[in-house]
Image (cartoon, rainbow, N blue to C red; front, side, top):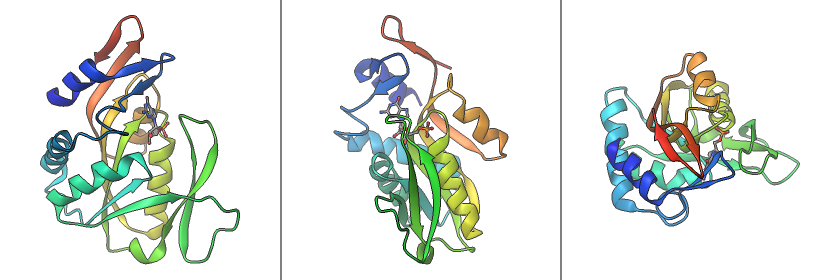
Length: 190
Ligand code: 5GP
């Protein structure tokens, strides 16, 4: 998606070689006009697939998922990062390793919101090592729901997540795919 790539080139900041900061438009300050374009693009890609629920993970995915859901006319569920040791009753749970902090945490979704009859589209801001998507896929499978695919804003294609998730047979559509990046050279897209 040309618009997103141009924005990353202009406003993205590379930190430590493998972290792209997009705080000024994607996951701190949010450019809602850009989100609208992103939502429309996800609808163009997945609109014919019978999606009736969008699943994302807190916190950065929520804004993008909500705007996207306005095109699909469906609800958004966000997997919560569980902070307590005891996981209470009626939830599906899986584990995610945080790319930015390195910690492993549980994510949960209430059973009442994810049903076997659902056709679920996953949405997230970034795909790096694939742990966040893998955790979300696990939740969908635990519920026995149908998985339509994953819509990702920025895939760092030089990291293994995209290959791993596609290797599981899941359709992944990334709007900007970064082939390489460095503080000196900037970002190169696939
Ligand atoms: P993964 O689980 O695929 O390794 O990482 C995906 C998650 O880590 C995303 O939900 C995103 O919040 C975060 N993340 C991964 N790489 C980056 C990055 O380069 N920049 C930012 N801002 N977040 C990232």
